[in-house]
Amino acid sequence: MVIDAGKGSHVSAADVDDVGKFEVSGRADIFCKEEGAMKKEVITVSDTAQLPFSPGIRAGDFIFVSGQVGYVYAGGREVKDIEAQTRLCLDNLKRVLAAAGASLDAVVKVTVFLRSEKDFSAMNKIYQGYFVEDKPARSTVITGLALPSMLVEIECIAYAP
Image 1 (cartoon, helix red, strand yellow):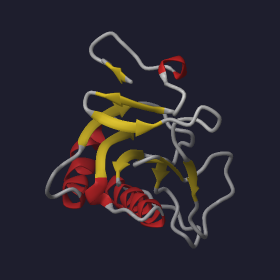
Image 2 (spheres, helix red, strand yellow):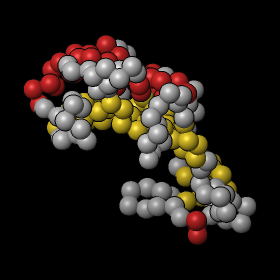
Image 3 (spheres, rainbow, N blue to C red):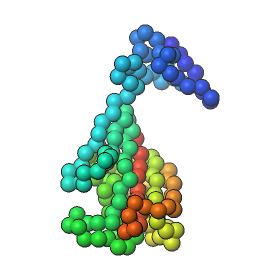
Image 4 (tube, rainbow, N blue to C red):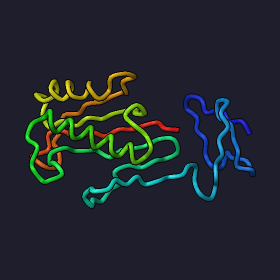
């Protein structure tokens, strides 16, 4: 069954034939009606706080990494400046990606949340050192964060087939 999933159209379970195979824009995919369209895997990282969300989720070939913060070192000491917090955020992203079998090279989209616009330049300077080639798409949002000591939070999406 060939389905044109061009502009303004979509593919639904009702469009899938009895075998469960369909083709969209020349790409053949398998769709399992009973189990869903793709496998979802929770990515865990040792020595992380017990929080009500996963550090990361692999869904098919994509890895979604939850927002990482860097306001406290592993020993509990507070991190006060934007440069150090940015480094720690990005190092935490690397840990989650490594647990999923990927690296920063696989990142296709990053979202940076900053407490203050005055920290943008300093954050950006550190960020550039982590994404040297094939820079991912990025959005930066100035917003309040969960705790006053958090200056930056960074999340990403990676593509790792």
